[in-house]
Length: 405
Ligand code: CS2
Ligand code: MG
Image 1: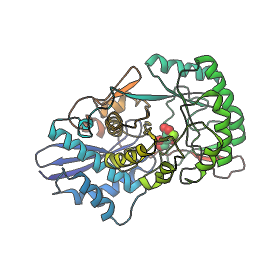
Image 2: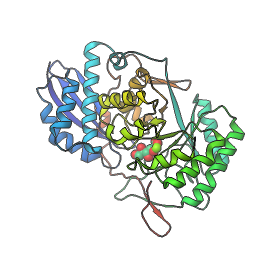
Image 3: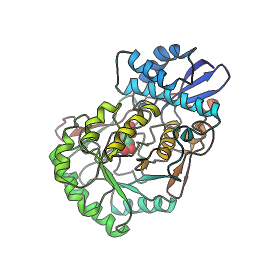
Image 4: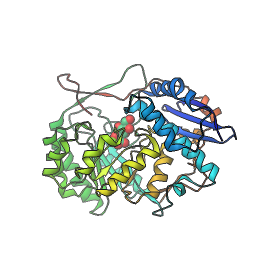
């Protein structure tokens, strides 16, 4: 069996997705996600111009060898563009292997270690009543763990929460020729958030697992203070407190708080989190299959994490396609150290372009039992939604300084 074709499909059913479709000479197809939010065309070019020609004629079953060939063979290693391109090939080859074997990918990964994959949803509001409504709506849908984001008085719209953001569907941040800009004030944020959690605990009780995302906006000592201030509200995790490239920052945070820490959605490789895991500076590693080299590389990261008692918490926002959600769910079901899976619901239009076997039921995802990853792409529908430039917002302080987020 040989790879005979590799096509890049760009579609924008409400937001942009880059998908690789690999076809074998037997007519088996596999899909991989290559979407890097706001930088989509760079990965499309990497795949089209530099990777697809190398795939033709290769044995699709040699997944590990192909991964090493693309990673070591390029000489230029790591980074979101390279690793998303490798991830797309990797997912497509796992999909093909599953289809040829007649087995869902989780069976190839060792079989199910649990009955379903616990997920958390996003609740947010511009004030407490709006936030409570958002939590209630998600509980009615069956969610058993909720991420809480809130607007901050005195600040305008901030990413993930704010006026006009009531349902948790805050993506895409802006479609147009340039990113929108937001104004940030760490002091106002640190003064406001603990009170929000106090009210959420009062209203929803002590048992509901609650999460919060600080979007890389704090210094280590500010993050330590937030972790400490949130201890009474017993968070499941506090996410991305400091800029992710500074692994050392989390040591300081760790020394001051018992609030569990999660990080990793912008990591691309095991080298980005090796120290965090080995030195037990985090509790959850949040890598995404698309941004960190696919199923093959996530398996490696999660296996390292298992040795040190660190659990998985894969990134699953609406800017990763259903192909990544499927890859994550197969892995989540199989690995021993699964923690939780992020689940932001895609718009119905996205699910129409990418019909999928994974399903949400009573707070859990299951990847389904279709051979392979269990996701298709309706290419005719996909072609109706051409690429549109779209960016994540840029964050500035009141004096105009560009700030982390
Ligand atoms: C967020 C993401 O889901 C999350 O935890 O941090 O929405 C993130 O901002 C986007 O994926 C960026 O593309
Ligand atoms: Mg996040």
